[in-house]
Image (cartoon, rainbow, N blue to C red; front, side):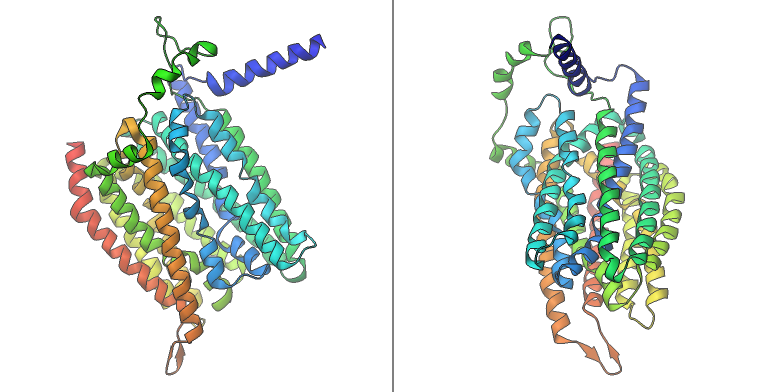
Length: 467
């Protein structure tokens, strides 16, 4: 019994040091934490891809969902972002957020679970319900942990190094992701048909391992957030810290006050408008391109994964250079040009039909890789520049939640449009037209508006901030 108590005290002490006393003490600690974040984020991004895109669409089609339904459901993560509004104040009250982030990361195990659903001896209606429920719970947990995670890594990376660091991180993450997607794509092709459930099981097993790796990497990171300090300038832990909680909570604003404060700032409104424009362009087209390649264009998994892998090698090669250019010329400047690549991706997919599918999809994927070499980094970098540092996590929660819900609504409306166009069988003499051609043209039009807004508004503000 005494031995058990000693082991319990040792475990609790280690748990406390890991999650509540993990302050970085020197630059080596910062650098080690940044490297651990790359490992964790590489696992996280791979999970997103293996539990989304063509893999998720294939799983949804196997349990009876339609193309339009599958496209809308892949965007449910955006709707899950709404829960950030209900949890942001609670998260903001947490002196230490490392444990919360790790707990939310572990909930991604539901993404592994959904790929085992085809093995269950239940009707398709029950499988659909389980799939939606598991996917939505995982997305809710991932979304409410995102602002705290982004604020965490932002506090570990100085502003002058963000372009260089995030580009290096992105290069590593993309390499790991596309490699795993290629292998999983080959497995899915090899197990197509009657053995499809075997492919889903293997994919779910890989996701399970990656979730554990993601949580482990984050648990090894240091957290530079400080709680209450004593007279000697040292952080207070345990029971003494509770004496300060009432005083701290008295200064916290209500939900409506936080919203009013955020939208009262011109920089926040600019970041919000930019994000909405991007969400409109992306979610009216991109969610439906995976099913378009699989169903209407009749492309095999292996081809899609191989082309994606090769094009992403190009993305990896140029991403570090793009990060350095972003630090030199400004995030908004380079983000604007990266969106041109994604605009061309939408245009080539709009031109793709079964007779020319392979060259058009190859060209579209090439330009998509070029655009994504900085698109994600650029948007996040612009948001960090425009949001107030002292309230960055709360403002990120509001921004991501509202824009996420908006993105889902755009995807939902586009799903209805897609379904309507597919039923009307729009065609011209001698050639059939596909609904996804129209959604991709729509996406290209909104991307053009986003580029104009970046040029005319955001770049001018960025120059004022950095001058």
